[in-house]
Image (tube, rainbow, N blue to C red; front, side):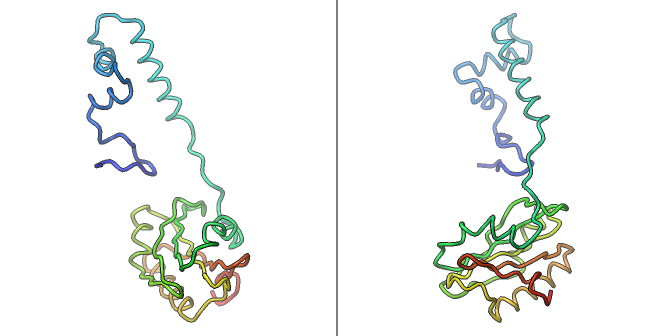
Length: 192
């Protein structure tokens, strides 16, 4: 499918006009297309349907897009993702892309690891952040053992990713490790 729906995208933009009218008005697409162009002799029913479609589009486009609450702490991050990561038998590493007010734009699953580790490279973490024009990122992963204490590898990966983010101008605000009912925040535990 050439068009990919997404933030700011138009989910049906890849459809040609004829197909779009057939999709929007099943069984009456071509007639509605002619009515929209003013080519049909006066048909009050189709004119009203067309005006109703336009009004729905106007109202939809004028409605503000709801945005999630901003992350204010590592506890916010943990609460939002804890159940998603809780039962994973392997390490899962996410980059949560944030706007300028630290509201999540989207999340990018960077890596799914093996039982006791995962491979993380700055290119995978920041590719989506650059593409989405993220203002900052929060790193998040789980420890399948349930113990959120960081390993030496976790510390090294965090240092490398913070450095890469600094070079790109996309700061890493925190790296949160989720365990069983507990978490570790590099930012809140000092040494940041």
